Image 1 (tube, rainbow, N blue to C red):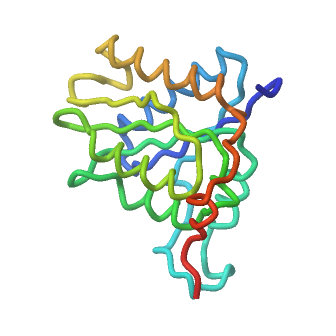
Image 2: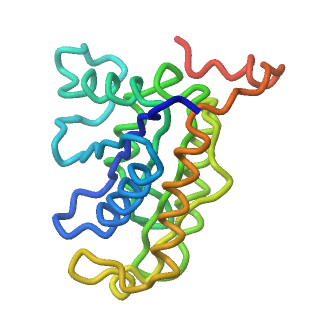
Length: 195
């Protein structure tokens, strides 16, 4: 583990009263308590047009800034509300602007929030995307089900859920620089889209 692992937390919610943001801030506090440094990348503060591979960098808004910040991290926390059984479009757009340079061999922790029951499909979809980018996704993931009662006025009311989120913060620091597995035939075949 590096002396001070640097973790970025990408918030895939645009809501002002976002439970996803509250949960990521809780994870960030734990990262800092565990000796890491952490930064919230709040996608409300980025101009990210819908991803178009034919768009010039000059027309891609803050995409270069986002990629630089993610690339500089030792580990990444991805947080999203669950929309229609998956993660948010704003997070999808942010990830689409990134690629292997930003995610390959990085430790990634996943967090999803749902107004209803456990947001398992959103977490599964994020896990699949991160694996396709050759990231090392933590086995532990944090879910905030029934978010309207789990968080009130920006504070967790459900201590069990809050502890799951804090555990995610602990693990992302402890595994921030895990050594990647040696290349395999499968990983060498995963080259992404080519023209």
